[in-house]
Image (cartoon, rainbow, N blue to C red; front, side):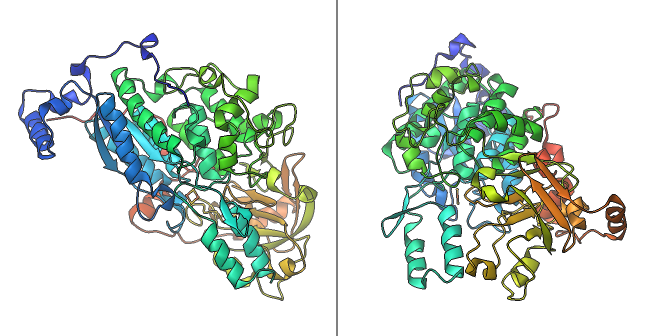
Amino acid sequence: MTEHLSPFSQHRPKRSADSLRSARWFGRDELRSFGHRSRAKQLGLDRDDWEGKPVIGILNTWSDLNTCHMHFRVLAEQIKRGILKAGGLPMEIPVMSVGESFTKPTSMLYRNFLAMETEESLRSNPLDAAVLMGGCDKTTPALLMGALSMNLPVVYVPAGPMLKGNWRGETLGSGSDVWKYWDEKRAGNLSDEAWCEIEDGIARSPGHCMTMGTASTMTALAETLGFSLPGASSIPASDSAHIRMAVRSGKLAVDCAWHDWKPSDFITRESFENAITVDMAIGGSTNAIVHLIAVAGRAGLPLPLDDFDAISRKTPHLADLRPAGKYLMEDFYFAGGLPALLNAMGDLLHRDCLTVNGRTLGENFKDAAIHNEKVIRPRANPVAESGGTAVLRGNLCPDGAVIKHAAADPELLTHTGPALVFEDYPDLKARLDDPDLPVTPDSILVLKNAGPKGAPGMPEWGMLPLPKKLLEAGVRDMVRLSDARMSGTSYGTCVLHIAPESALGGPLALVRDGDRITLDVPNRTLTLEVSDDELAARRAAWSPPAPHYARGYGKLYLDHVTQAHEGCDFDFLHHGPPTPEPAIF
Ligand code: FES
């Protein structure tokens, strides 16, 4: 990467030191400022450590239980080095880690928690700008949501993907190969010994999942939106270039603080159109739809589901990355990374959108070249002529549903079959492998009560496992429907995010075993072939499931979470009148 610190002065003059936000805490001749200064000295700081300098927060999502961020303690020190080099005062603040692997019942339950913690950590502390450290799935949208709501200058430092996995010389991809080899194990084709070897080799280094799953998708979209230095999201976590990027991000945050260069200065409707376009070009995770809607909502920019479908139809799929393709993030980086892809997209993007370094997106990537056209395809030779995600409508999903058809069996994209209904995930676990399960390859597996309120937290249950007896018969894909999400590393003919969800009495709640359902992806429809009169009768007999929580954060979540097509943010966190700065008395 080249040097990217930008002359912000073309947009806004440098502010005076006494106008810095932190000067309200440290710079006054009054009792409270005395308290703040004396406590800063408790840290071992002298006045010249802060006087005339911006204070830069480092919001660190490190924990031992977020293995994707296992390098963040060391990385934070490098960010501090950049901040100090640029004449700022770094202050590290821990925020909720929200690791994808260990957080139960699902990390999605806590995305909004981290978003709130981010916003309030930025607001309540003496910060002039911040570096946000994230990467594992929910951390990127959460940090951006909080930052947009607070609207303080921020630079996003993505964790970077981990190195490729390896098993007996075969490349392993996070998630995708777990599902693949688990199916082979259940079908009796893989030994326990081989399964243990895969366990050893699939996560070899620091960093987030290295497929184009949710983490790689969201960090790429954060960069496209303009929150990161150019190329930052593609650098493997273990590469020394990643450290250099972190140092430069710290320096940039100081520059942003001096020029008060906030997200509202560069985030526009066009920035989000770019993000949706890139999501389609990289074959990104379906989770990006929910997250982008939520992030845009914090900026007061509605993103209807139909925008995703419209952009998908006209955007070629260019990055050949798993699970919708062949390669992994390390290959993507060496092929030129996101800047090369953006440059290859040409007029599909709004190149004049501004970014965190004060330059336009087009200026940032104008010199980036593709080094491997197998991994990043030129527009003349795309992986597919259109994007990999479709939005469905119909009487089964009045508020929409999504499918990643690029990662599905093409034969199943137009399919009618009988429903086999599971009332919830425990019901699925209990019955799926029953040899007497009345299932055929034509069946459509239906999972209810897996949405934002019903699960709760809309877990990644949407790639329903296939019944063992079908796996043993060689079946590897079926049509599956739910109000859940699915991992960005997953694949298969899985209709997701059905809204309204079944726990709210959406039509999904009314489906019964044997009902005929038609999936028609070319025509973007999902139809329950049951008469309106019959559905009305079923609705009259329906009663909602008992809520999962009666108190605490879970109760707050159930009371305020919105549906998938609205981003699953809390209704009271959407864009609104500015929240006042804290009084300092
Ligand atoms: Fe963190 Fe996959 S587990 S990104």
